[in-house]
Length: 305
Image (cartoon, rainbow, N blue to C red):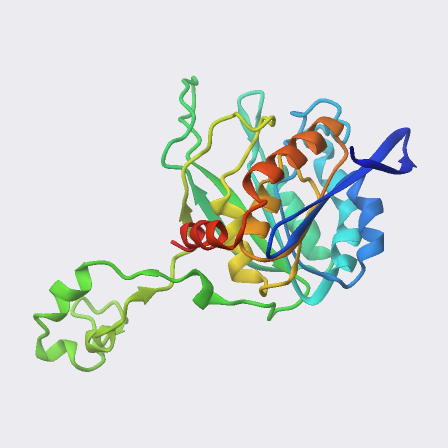
């Protein structure tokens, strides 16, 4: 049974740690604003999907979109202080439709963080090849979500080589027919200002991905209404943290970030104030993250594809 560690706002906080051969994941049922006070300057990456505005009952009080910015700013200082100087914050979030209109609390939140000293390094899009079906009078299916990369520094830890992708079969076909204009850098024929030297692609097997991540949705069978795929936090964990680093998800939910961290050899901390999600996360981590060396190698190779 998880051991009780302290009383917090009338809720008995609980803690449990899951281990595999390469890393550990600690899950705490509590308010992350309080827990992170014990982790000042120790965290390499915070990657999370905050509660949807006015969507989760009994979960951080089900914040109304109009008050979302003010509420999220209460996490700004704990997040900022917990990160190392080269650490990063990745927020997966989507605007909510309110009375038929997109509420722009998401952009207001990012602007508010920027005003408080965070650097907005890049905006990623999570493209969903299999968005949820439905029909609405003035809009179509949601096929993407934001993933904002913020940091304490303009030059955070960034390992682009860790997320390289296979270059594709087009290389062999294209390079087999190099013309004279492909052997040196020159301006493009349509005067776009871009140049190329295709011969430099010879013998290359990988290429850097774009900031659009195509990852399919997972089924709603993880005890949580908004489960994101393991591949999503895994991408940012590989890109923005060293092996052995500490990953934190302050809205831990069903434990997806912890599963990805365990499979990628990172220490991790999941925090959620919902006891149901705490129980589900611990259960899932034991099933999907507690692996031996052979299985770890196989799972890690899948996340690297």
